[in-house]
Length: 484
Image 1 (spheres, rainbow, N blue to C red):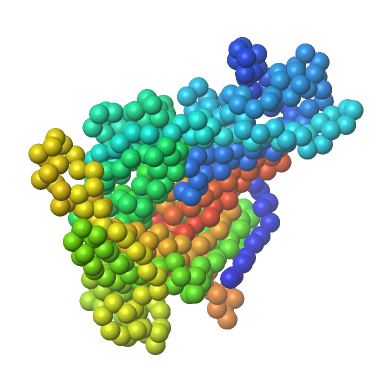
Image 2: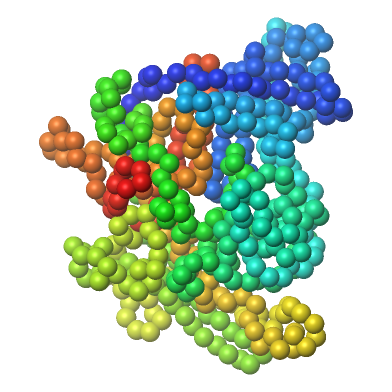
């Protein structure tokens, strides 16, 4: 792991416009905590169901009715919080009304006779509602039907996909008023909720979806579900890596130039911190089935038995031509990758023979004739249909989700609130060579990345944004200039 960091000089504080807590009993009483704000942190992540924020503030005991906010309002949990803050480019994050945050936990940090320090954990409304809602009905049809350009579900509660129903359209469940951005799946899946929580089912379904794109079936699968300040997302892995469907938001450069010098042409921002981490722990990746895994399927009604072992095709005999189209395996040609190619592994470890080269086995009992839709006659006609086509989905989903975390880069930049988890950015850093005056960018680690998670950090003295970036492949591909 290579790590390079410079001090965060020049990162000036930005504006927090509102931080108001409303009382639980009537919400008529409220108190502003802006005057005592010490620190604000805000998080988004594609691995996290909802957004989170934390606030640390000091209180002298005269905030409301000559008492502290915790005692005078009081703040006990579930209080509604209106929050808004903006960066130096006037990108503003606003959480109020339907998008307001709520107090999840109140933690006193320090308390004496003259002042106190309090830590508030803030969460989305849906984060709390998830603990009160259970899915106890049957779901038939598409996993996701997709959402419109304005982020609203295109289908109503009667014929929408499962994701739309659970999130928005069926009032029995989360019934969020926030926008949703959902990729359509190509496959159907019928199931019963079994009294599970909504977020559990949404993440469970993300493994079963095939993107509704050409040549996706049998080659790729897998979705992510998460929330940003813009609403909830349910996106295919290949969509996140597709530069046309997920255009890069920023081009980031890290170099050793003196703070205040101009940024090279074509880049949007200079990183003040940079850390590269190759996440290919070979043994762990093998255990998780990132490159080769098999599925053993059995149908108890007719004793059908089949073993399928798809392979990501990451070993090559010609290392110099590993990224040329004529040498790519068939399934790799149908994948969308952020870099030039998947990791090149040693052919010495290949195992020969049919269905022999695998590192993980998944066992699946086929659900033939399970939960067919329609009237009695239609159900009889579908009695031989498979509800979940495991051989076209399960292994591909396992491989793609594990491949996505092959390379990780962490960068710290001046506060930029236009960025969100799931956005793509282009990152370049100098190539390490004996010539210390070298200005060439690193052709192996540079290129397109996906924001796995981000944190906006605000204090009265500084504001910056930290990004954890990931991708499935290696090698710089494309150009740092947006739109090219």
